[in-house]
Length: 256
Ligand SMILES: NC(=O)c1ccc[n+]([C@@H]2O[C@H](COP(=O)([O-])OP(=O)(O)OC[C@H]3O[C@@H](n4cnc5c(N)ncnc54)[C@H](O)[C@@H]3O)[C@@H](O)[C@H]2O)c1
Image (cartoon, rainbow, N blue to C red; front, side, top):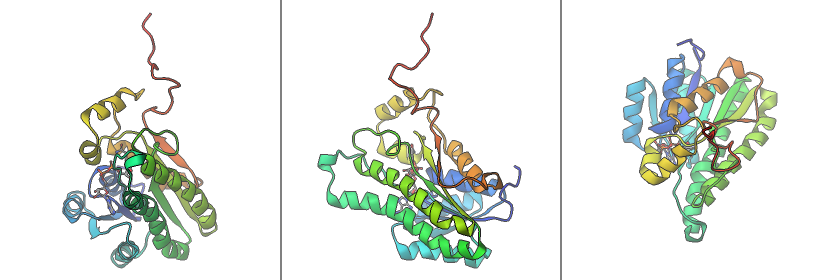
């Protein structure tokens, strides 16, 4: 490993498992001090112990919880260089079956949580006159969608809009704001919430021929957190194995 984040302090929210755990682990490999947050304490504590992070139980939809994880990072490590808000939920529900309560729950975690994370990290980053905010968006919403993803797609497209406004508002303080749009990444969450048939159909739709891994996504976060991304703000990186490229379903080269 190359020490690309040596001495930096990062918070990764939604890191008990899946993509968030992959991001936290990748940051630690590169020398960062990491505080991970998750609503669930059991996987959160186990992941923290496995990768050498500190765990702080955090529901990203709660302003008090998000402010507490920032205070923890400042107490323990004395600063905050990188804020990652990755927590997200993706129930599969057709729009006609989506209750207003389910709509509000998805919005409060995925979209409100992103705003709360940015808001909580801002005072310290302004004081330091530097910082990186990086949010997990998705190709679902900003680029493509499928049935059952109405609320989810709306929140992820909303995150991309928020990234642009925040990047403009915070640029004068030396703070960059970016996002990553994963394609279909094989995680505990995907396995729990999507059928084997859906997962196979997604893998078949990827030109690079496989689902992504949390590490594939974490490498894009690492770039955005590193010094190499000093001049990058207000944008997103798609990490999808080429999934959004085909004009039609039959994209493979035809045999002679
Ligand atoms: N897996 C994919 O294919 C994929 C694709 C595009 C985007 N994403 C996004 O990546 C992120 C992570 O997805 P994943 O597949 O790793 O999911 P996952 O379900 O495996 O992990 C998500 C983690 O977030 C935590 N979490 C959920 N709600 C929370 C809350 N309110 N506060 C704090 N923590 C909370 C969960 O406990 C869990 O540990 C999500 O934002 C998701 O929308 C995933």
